[in-house]
Image (cartoon, rainbow over all chains, first blue to last red; front, side):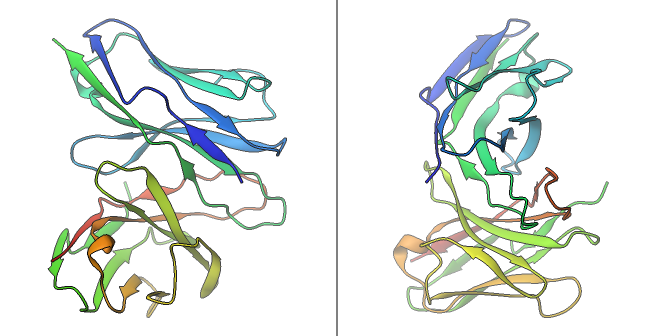
Length: 118
Length: 116
């Protein structure tokens, strides 16, 4: 069974600074997807960024980028130029890539609570 | 922008009572999911639903749980006899389907269930 581990329960960053959130995962599959979801205090989860395991290039979405190390099974999220609105719970998630056509469920880590200091 | 909606936002019920949590997925989506998040814990998968039947379910999703798509828009989660440990935030999600593609799961705002 796949597992996702986020070892940092809480992180703090100064506004405009850069912060990196860690995520490791365990799987025997070679093809899968990885995601970072943001859950603000309003509690609706929003997709931040996604990475396909077969792609070597790290995904980037504006101020958000990932460092995907497939061999190490590591998938960290870097937030550049942190803003007050980035304060939220961040969840790392894994999903199998199922060629059979079914959509797999997401497997989440425990989350990292990010605080942004003005 | 289309979004997943859930009602009610907060439900308080007594132990042993039945509850139905409602979700309206995004209209052109074909896959539907329920997840739950016990306070302070990770988000856990409960069940996925496609083509009017359960596609996958976790070990959490026992005989006390059921899902239904009673009409073309609603997707419901029923808990037949609630227990204290069912207190959690329940999230509905939906996604488009395409074989092998990574379509995003869109989450609703959640229903906070409190069992007393």
